[in-house]
Length: 398
Image (cartoon, rainbow, N blue to C red):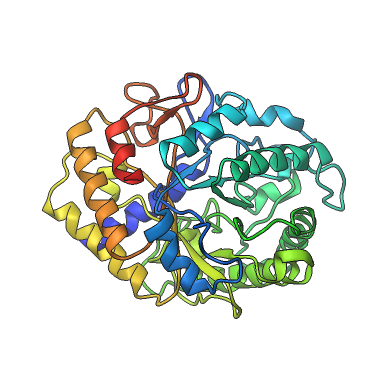
């Protein structure tokens, strides 16, 4: 039961990442937070295992710019322009915000990016102004001394949405939709990889965010060995290999750039039929809002049972015998501050002892705001450049 609970918790993380509606109509999304940063003492040519191990001991903490460049709307193929950045209720990102995150002690920033609202033609050409805006935030982050992760985030559609939206899907039995999805993923990474090819290894690419069969009964969870998840993972592996091949062949520093690769839904419990592509400098991307009942649902008390779920999570992650980064983690604010602090202490201690970096999801929503108790993942008040629940954030950065 506890193991199942942990798996559901991990899956719920992904759910947060998908957009949800807030009280004011703005959508919000959570993501796992734990440290991950580049150590300036590590040579740019460091091997992946070396890089991953040093990531925790030398960087050890990270923060997500959540609900910002990943904010999106679906329903048509019109280019939405730069306005999407604030469409989910976030203020426009400034250099002062990025500098404040770095000053707090975070060493890595994950910048989720959705691209499908910024396509200007049927060839999947990305709006130049959108690329420039992504670059501006990447540059600020690198100037602050942090490492940066960018990805394809909320471009994962249902099969039905593929006719009225740009993006990709993980179809059950539709070869045409799979080819359409491959074309989209290839086009986006061809442009993004070329645009950033001369950046050093402090810029990391994450090929996809929580790739999954959106809208299906098994979108977030399925029993062990489930044939539909196995089939979906086979398709996801095709997408990931295609993206990786394009990145590696695109010139500049991309031949050796660190690249993060997720399994189905970025859920380490849903690896049926999935394996990492071949190659160097690859890191498993996992999301882990663990345990789900505490971090996202009705359980407000952190006890030994929850500790066991977290132990199981890290045992699973270590069992991959590959570098792992937890790209999203957090415990929703249900007015249970003391227990959330215990969660942070235990979770971060496990991450440190297992040398697995993690990145905090932050959607700037705190209790009692928002109708959805699972969606209160606010830590940094970007309007005031101050921190909510600073004692929890300090546990991470210390």
